[in-house]
Length: 155
Image 1 (cartoon, rainbow, N blue to C red):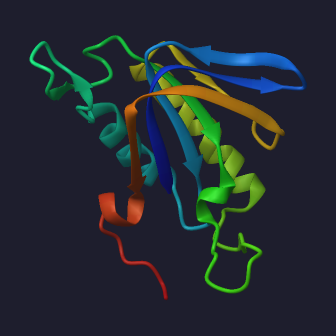
Image 2 (image 1 turned 45 degrees about the vertical axis):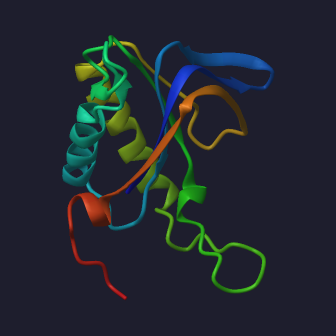
């Protein structure tokens, strides 16, 4: 599982020319799911993300987490986080989770996040979304469950 976290001053998702989600200060999180991901992995990734201290305190140091600054979450599914670009010029997405598994885990992540961060919005799974944000910093972090959880992956 991969979370691409962007600290945002604001962000929004538009589908079919209609804004379906928006946040102010918080995280825009692009979520990539592989076929080996589980709810247990999602739980660990969510906890790591929520606890990231990447907001500035009164001294200008990145010491504050999302809850401390009353931040919001915007979660967007992004299977392209598992693009394999090693061969040729057309990426392969065979590492991405099957649509059924990915949608189930995406919905699970949204529901779990809402329990911790009430101001959690989300994109529409499988839709052609237009995502915009004002990246604050810019500050972008990639959380990969293979590194966060230190599990072994098949070669």
